[in-house]
Length: 202
Image 1 (cartoon, rainbow, N blue to C red):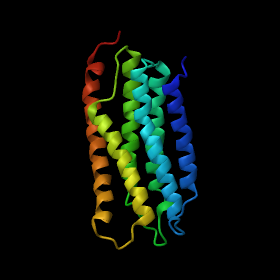
Image 2: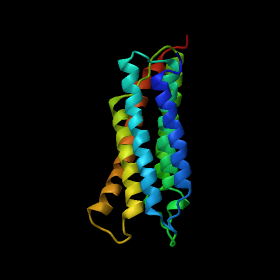
Image 3: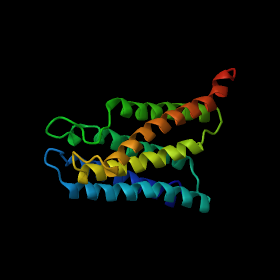
């Protein structure tokens, strides 16, 4: 069946991502509710964990489908990009207008731009019969992005404004690591795709 167990898990992740976004939509840094962010964090962790689970079952049960190859990265992008957009938005700005996550709009643009370009390259590649699977740096990117989102949720819920200890520094280290590995991942995919553009049209 096209909608097999791995694809069902992926669809469940999409539904959980939507619930997660609705939950974050109720939050305001001007009237913070740490419990709301803790609930959102739990949902995000479960959703991110199923990204590994659906791939595991697809390989173990030999149920890799065309739908799964499209749906899985799509849901990943919805979950991660949607999270960064919301975290960089007005809901996480305090009374002074400062975004407590320290996410800059240009950082989110880099993340979104990378995902859009890689999606386009993958579609072009596979239309020519060439598989365009995830590179190791791409998988590491997903892991670091997920950890960054979790840390930012924890920091927004429990970090004091004047906290300059490790608890305040670690989330920002991961934010910059996310930007760096996103850029590195984009460069890797562009290099991988160069041969496709150098070939004469069929």
